[in-house]
Image (cartoon, rainbow, N blue to C red; front, side):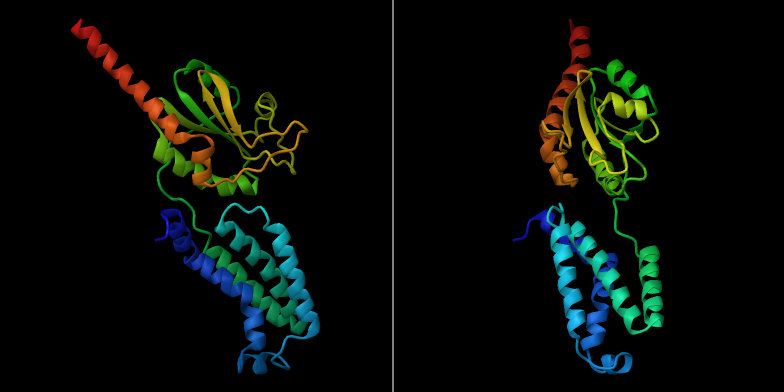
Length: 267
């Protein structure tokens, strides 16, 4: 019996976006080796030695780039991206018109069949500048989970839906989620030791605050300054930040807080 996360991954990969992405990634090789398509578009129906070399080169690039991909969706997306670049080059080598038509299909797929993302409700407070630190200090009895992000960062864009989904599942009156664009507020980035450079591996950074103080963050920094990679998936964030335990504690504290006035009235 497949687990729920596995079934969810399969459902996502069977969506129109990924199916068309995979089709576009293999279309040259299918057309070049499938009769009668190959005889109509090409001079022969076999891959030549140079095309096999390019295919081997693509395989090496995919292996290197996908060594640390966190999810099957990311693995497929990266693989298809490099495969489509190679497809365009091979089509161009055969006939520039073929390459132009292929690129048009890729653009249409990108526009009309975008990558599936979370579209449900979110419970996130968006901060500006110094009001982040002020709010955390003012609401010390509230546990805050803050995402420090940059709007231009692809990993932040990818993680945005995951963070929204987590906020929807775990928010409470005393367990809140927030975001701040540190590319717009460099002083905030400096205060929390987050590098916002174009090559930064600290974007996004997620920090858990309790009692007004930082308790945990991801990604971690090694003693030598190297950023330790974090898998930005819902399951991993829940595990890394022990959200089930944090949620249970916050729920318990909230119950005590609500029961206390009732007991005082009875007394």
